[in-house]
Length: 357
Image 1 (spheres, one colour):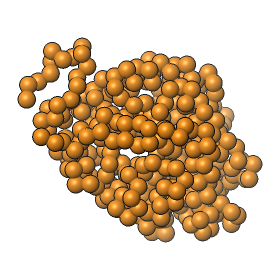
Image 2 (tube, rainbow, N blue to C red; image 1 turned 120 degrees about the horizontal axis):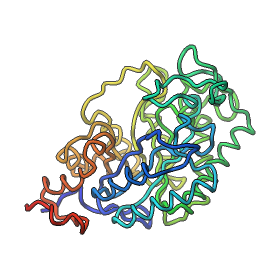
Image 3 (spheres, helix red, strand yellow; image 1 turned 90 degrees about the vertical axis):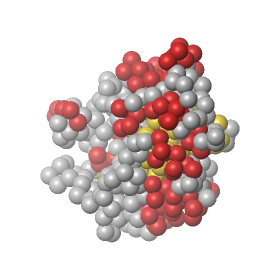
């Protein structure tokens, strides 16, 4: 019996053994950006559990690009050695190791969720945030500094340098984080970008920073390695970024060497009316795929093997990215294979527990 979810997916020179990816999930468990045993076990267990692609949480390309002081980072060479240990383990389980590169923009310098999530002032170890325009995410917070030309070029250079370190660390997939109200998304959306220079105003100007970052990353990322971009396909707010914008952006990114668009939504304004429910974001991935021909990833409240199989089998997306469901069950892919009657290879150490079909 053919099971679409467990068919391989080839992007450039990399083939994923199935269509299940570990979605980037912030762990807020780093000190000075360093990965540690928590990340090794967290990411490694999902590789043992059978995912085809294991993506790290958002890895900050600069200290000021962190959401919280506890974020993972890849802004200095010292971050690389422990990441090498993680990627080696992931690859040893037959999965592909990927990293999400990110800059939090105006949503940076906040406490981790279980520490309250409030803005961390500079006097308490925080830092002044940057953004396309001097507009805070939430009323009452310190306005960010609007990036000048030198600041924009630093952001581009930081992403490029992070890509070089990612390769050294053993990653074979990069995802650029241009979603959820972080810096690259802030430039895309007219709700957060009120610039009047070459990086603001028209659609072509608002996508310019993402294109600059994409070009800089692709220039140092091996030709055979895939480059993904996560977008928020809509702001869910009048006057904001729309699915029509996302389709147009995806068509441009396709020409700049991007291999898959990971379609999430929202995150750029605090009071958006988002109709959250099972599979609520899948139609965005489907439309981008159908109208541009770019492979897409679907994410958001995908919780059962049947749902994941339907998304791939019906051609709504090429990849499903699971987050909370993989927190609940790191072995979801092995369970899904059993439920869908797909034959997959189990870790040798666990074969004695493999259920019979």
